[in-house]
Length: 184
Ligand SMILES: [Zn+2]
Image 1: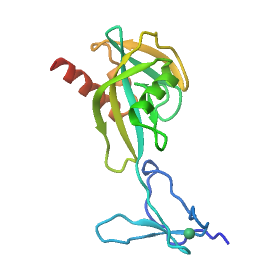
Image 2 (image 1 turned 90 degrees about the horizontal axis):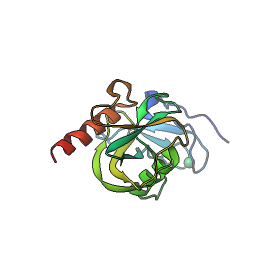
Image 3 (image 1 turned 180 degrees about the vertical axis):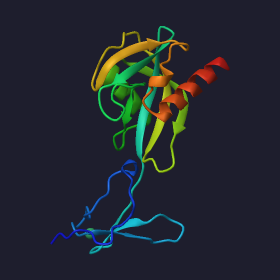
């Protein structure tokens, strides 16, 4: 019954996300088709015509403050293994974004936080992830190494490891965080 998608020739660099060959509804092959002139090609089922829309993934992150410094962790997973970033990760379907940021912070650095504001929303052409970064205050505990984390540290504004940060969004969000704080 299953047959490989024929004519699925969209150029998909890895960073644009996974390429799917089979219809998730009926299992027949998917083909890339341009349905509307002004829209990107869609994956369309050859049998049942199901349109498999490819939407962004959303990552929810928090920049927690503890003792006047911010919490960063060194990543224990790829991509950017060993680089510094604030806690964060993919939200689950139906999960409120602030709660996703709080959950990721608990999982990665064992810290309960209160979300206190939005730092920014970061997206890039051709990149499948939208990154939402919140400001947060620690609720009294000391952060410690949790899931997928090699090391945890507290950093003042002059101590940020700018040359060793994980992602372009990490640099951008930390710049935004500190520039806004200086503005008051
Ligand atoms: Zn189908």
